[in-house]
Length: 353
Image 1 (spheres, helix red, strand yellow):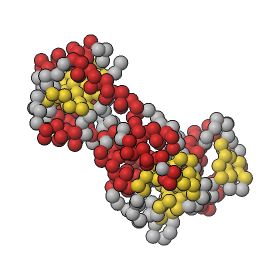
Image 2: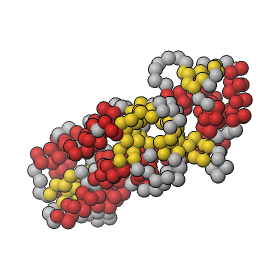
Image 3: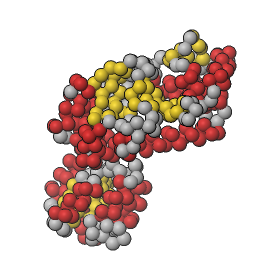
Image 4: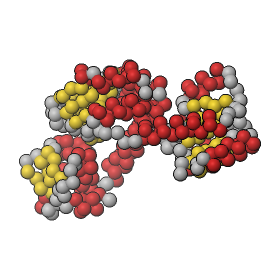
């Protein structure tokens, strides 16, 4: 059963709306002002929010602003209720990211139709899209719904194959494209003043790269290089801006991706600070498996240079070589040239935990 939160200071309107929704088989939560509504939304994460504009404690605009800043609530469909009909109020709500706007008094059918449309659209956006060009095309269509943007992915010039060790972008340069990996593997890394590398991310088929700098309008903070022949789809900076700033669904998608990226980096830094090299090497090997294993085979193999592995671990190449040699002697892995095969994955997982 889907849950809808009603934030409305007028008791009669609040109770009548709740009754309509309950009779339509929705689970209903209610709040008599914006401040309480924000707390209920953060605690319960409803499927949709219906919110009055003019309220004590915190008005509807403030509610939407606060919920939009929280990744957990930013994607919840939001419908304003108001007795006002001035265009300025409607435009202000839409600019803040409201999905719809109903003017009181409204009839039952109008309310239920608006809710059904927004829930259906949000379901499409949340569905996991196929991690290929066709899937990205579906994502763009579902999120934007504007025919002019179909050319982003139907234009063959936007898709290209690049060789192994090809630099997609470099640290301290300005971004002009958003990259989508249609097929292949890419690493991102930072370089210090002494030329030492530290790998910040491993990216696979279905991943976006370079969106943080586009969102911040800043220079790249890292370099991206292909680990194998890779097929890429590129979206120009202006087209990406059109997606982000003109559609709340798309912007919420990238807000979630950005939030997840920050959490991953924080966890990585904590492990780097407090974990032993042996534990970090085990974590790196499991990370490679999680990122790049494409089948259900018991063992996982991948060619990777010792330099790249040491950059993931955050230790010298010599130290990493000694550690994987120990792992080999213990029967945890097998080494053939540059290829490492994980033999006892359970033990490696227990070692990193």
